Image (cartoon, rainbow, N blue to C red; front, side, top):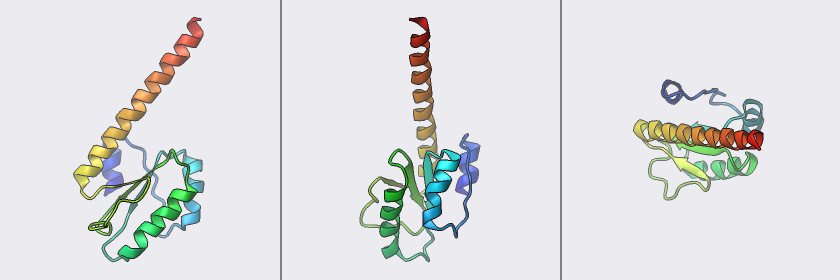
Amino acid sequence: MADALASLHGAHCISLGPQTPLEKIPHAVSDYRAGIVCLCFSAAYPKRRILPYLKELRNIVPKHVEIWVGGAGPVGLNRSPRGGKVLLTLQDFVAAVSKYRRARARERLANISNDAELFSN
């Protein structure tokens, strides 16, 4: 559902599937030039395994790549993962997608302005 919502708000999503091995995620990030890795943990996923999983993921994906976490699994975690964003509602998710897209658009405009200055000098 999250990828459908993100797509409706202009994001390009690639679903890797629920059984993707952790070590394959950095390759997908690189291959698809992803800016975000978004994971959903169900309530059935052991809560004690979420933060260690996210810590390991943070260590193997580039630091500029955001890690977003949602689903019923992270509800009630005693802390947020370092370098990660917990999005517990679909409204939180949609707001994060919109904020991310606005930030990337500002970056692209700044790059275009910088490029234009180079050509005008």
